[in-house]
Image 1: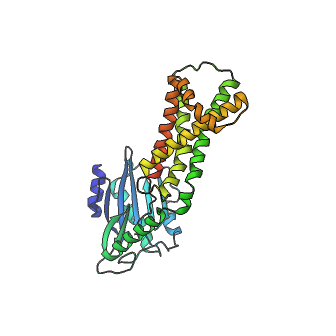
Image 2: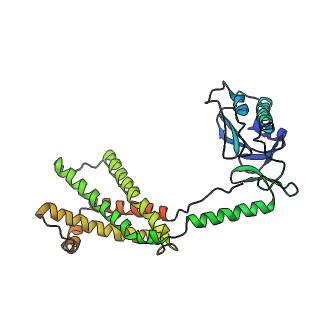
Image 3: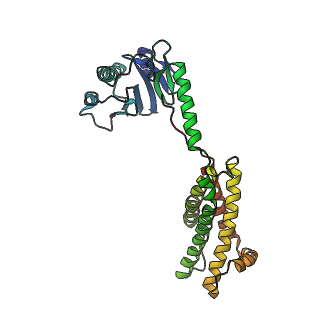
Length: 316
């Protein structure tokens, strides 16, 4: 780490957070990041012209270097040089390599202009580290970029009539998945004539893992619908829990109806709803805990999905 601190001081960079320093190399906004301590790993990032196409000269600098030791890429308006293990390199060698890449960038059409990377204004342009990248912006363009992102995110997360109309479909999906899972489990136990399930670490791991997987499969898509609906947009977490509770209750009624169909050949949802309290009362503590676990897992992932806003990167 002392070697890296010395390198940062020699480059004249300014530390912006615990792992990143910011500066300019050959007039290009540059960020140096430490992403690993043992072995020490370094990543140098240059802000480049996103419309530039003269990349081959830069890529040739690492020709013959194994990819597990170093990698160079140019994408999304940045050039990235990653050194996965810098133990065998001294500070002078690392600095020379960085400067060679900066020289190659500066001599190509990848070099950004001397001013703001958005408007080209030189007078007010300031070196910044924004949204995980080194850049150079004037205050006006930074404000504009923030407003653009805010508008895009508001549009992406705007409630829609289609999602509101899709709530019954999402409820049916969760109810059908709930009933289908427990019905398939019953059929499997009957097919293999398993009357006693031995509870040990392995079986519990498999069973709880299956419950979590089903909870994700049922809860996450339902949460997306809840998030985008007009009815629950202001309280997605609470709405998700109530939504899953109602859908799981409907799923349990459907499960009882399927149980009646298998036992007496009659499919009757009204009768299944009337028999639901008796069926629930017949469950052992183990099956009650399994049902509750699936309910909690489904509600958790539904709430997580419903509260997760779509975001976009700040275009700087």
